[in-house]
Image 1 (tube, rainbow over the protein chains, first blue to last red):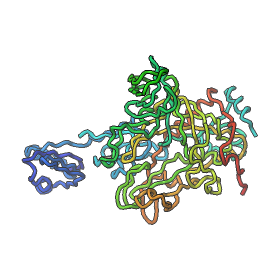
Image 2 (cartoon, chains in turn cyan, red):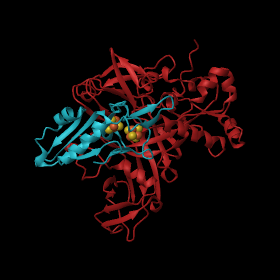
Image 3 (cartoon, rainbow over the protein chains, first blue to last red):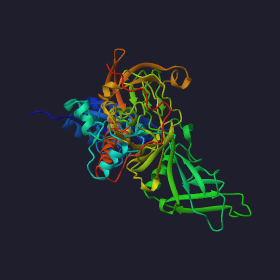
Image 4 (cartoon, each protein chain N blue to C red):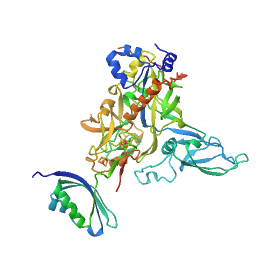
Length: 139
Length: 392
Ligand code: SF4
Ligand code: SF4
């Protein structure tokens, strides 16, 4: 049976009692996933989130989400979370050199902007770079 | 040789041959400059980019009782009222007093003069607020009313400096990210930003301002406008290449146009993280093909246009010291990646090429349909009209 490898970006949100659980270790050890932390933050009252990409076998990925939820961690898959609003976009291109994954890129030679949500790692660089708020992140 | 009048007559008769500054390149390659100059009457250009030094004059009808508005706000953005009783000037980069600016660095600058201009053009309602000290003839001291562009008596864009002929290309040699009017620049030359439509840009297609002068009829923000004056910082005598293309900013235009004709697709308020607000403006200028030289100039291609690569890092541009570290042409810049000092660096535009094409196409349609005629300049710009193309 062939294994279906996938790569997903997720936000994990956890409450004070979960801080301290070795979440990343668990993902590697129990589910054989490769996590890559893009952004993480734990605020003073210890509520926190980790934005990370998970690469591994689809079955394991699904099982890991279940396990995380059992630990009281809310999981949000980020695929649809960065939105590019084509009708607002001025097609300027200012987001394209800062986008690390080429999710926002220019189709040449027409120089038209396109957004490939599968490539997006939700780093939010484009949100800072866009002069007209044509990209948004709903956290 | 064709005169403005001959070309306008053809336009009125619906017989004018009009092509864009992109299309003319292939045509001239195909049939030659001489034949192309004979066939083509007008070449249309276009640009859509962030243009600081933009703004609008507004007149609000008289209130009852009358008022000499001393201080004026539009959606909390201050406008300059020290002109007359109910006239004001709203600048594109003005910010409301509540904006935290860069005290939360880098500031996000959500709203300002540029946005109010866009909202007015889009037909949205905005809040006009005014204060005054009161006089015998103008007793009212305070006024507040929601208005739309329809309620404004006259409204026109009058921008002191738009449409830069060419412009700096920005990178950041420093060790930290900088937030500039040229966008977010990552450290150690992490990216390169440029801001020109290159081969489609108006003043690059008439590099010696032979036809673009005071009174030239233009596309401005989706409506019709005029070149009013040389723009501020107009520098026609900057160094040029063998084609006459300036190697730096060089020429600029002061432009004027009726806001009530404009379309918010072609004029947009912008927020530049860490810098402030501004206005993206769409400008299209028709170039009359008066002779072969005019046609030759319009065949300029991206590879013919060099721009100075400047360090916008903390030790560069902000210091006021020379900051040019190289030169790149627009063909390289538009490719998305350049090789500079042995490093591959990603490039991105800040001005929209697809919109520039749309503007040049729209202007072409206007002329072909006979609704838009050429305006012969009543006076050329400083540095205008010379020299003729050097034969090689
Ligand atoms: S968040 Fe924006 S910059 Fe980051 S990967 Fe996605 S599209 Fe690119
Ligand atoms: S920076 Fe914003 S407006 Fe410009 S191309 Fe990207 S999404 Fe569109």
